[in-house]
Every structure is written in structure tokens, then in C-alpha cells.
Amino acid sequence: SGSISDWLRLYRSIMTFDSSAIPDTDVINSWTLSLSSEAGFKSDGLSVTPSIAVTVSAPASNTALANGDFDSLTFTDIATRIAYASWKVDSTYNDLAGTDLTVINRTGYTRLGTMSGNYDLDNVEPGRPGNSLSSQVAINSTETAGTADDPLLTVSHGVTAVTFIPKLMFF
Image (cartoon, rainbow, N blue to C red; front, side):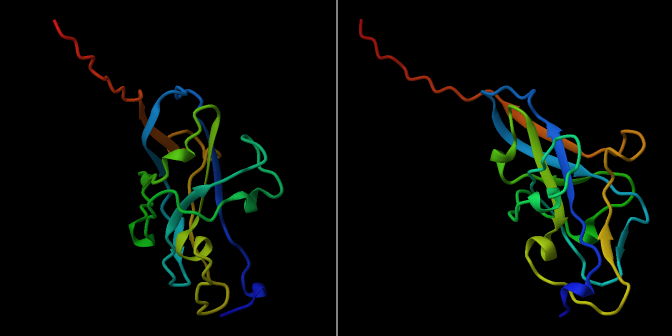
């Protein structure tokens, strides 16, 4: 176990998606956050196999980062985690299936974040086998050139089921 001075960086991602086009009356059936990485942006020098987890974020703005946004992520899993060994780095998408349907905002932006699930989210300090080592999975963002690798939020939604109560009529 180490001290705070043993660690140089802790990465988290914040993303916002304008989901206001979903009608207010629609039911959210499911959602998936799809993220991609390039070859060479996955390393595990610490041999700790970090998983990737999705949480809710609450940045100060939907379009720009601000001081304090790093701490705006909640510490509750809202999607299935992806294990380090399963994370693809060939520009294809890694799909994290949502488990909390209430996080989709029908009237504005859906705000999500990612972090290491088995360390950051679970509040467990990873082992430290040596100096100057790191473990990371870098995620393509909207800042990456082009749009082919941008994060995607896919939401399945539909109209509310209506229950009809038959009216009994006698003739």
C-alpha cells in the first residue's frame, strides 16, 4: 500500500449527450454507451487489470470543462462494467449496457462519466509493483479528429403502454 504521493494521475471521463429529442411521455426501454479506443492506448504496467465503469456526472457546463468537474462523478455503477481484458482497441466500439434507466434525461442533457470500476469506483488502491508504471485505457472523445470514433449514447424508447379496461355492456 502507498501514500497519496505514490500516485501521479487518476483519469476519469465526462461526457454529455443532448437527449432532449426523446418525447417526455416515452418510456426508456434501454440505453447503451459505446466508446472506442485506438491501438496503443491500453496499457497495464501495474498488472491490475482495471475495469471500465459508467457513472452519472454533473459538470458545471454541458459544453466545456470547469474546475471541480473531476469530482462531479457519482460513485454508483449505472451500466455493466467491461473488464480490462475485454476492452477493444481496434477503433470498434465497446458497449456498456445501462442498468439504471432513470439517468436518461428527456428534457436536456444526459450526463455520464467513466472511471476505473474496480479501483476508483470501488475505492480500492491498486497494488504498486514499481516506480513510473501506469495502467490505463484511453477513450476516444469528440476532440478526436473526425466523428467515426465519437462516444455514442443509444437509447431505446417508446410510447407508454396503455391498459384498456373493457366496459361490460348487456343487451
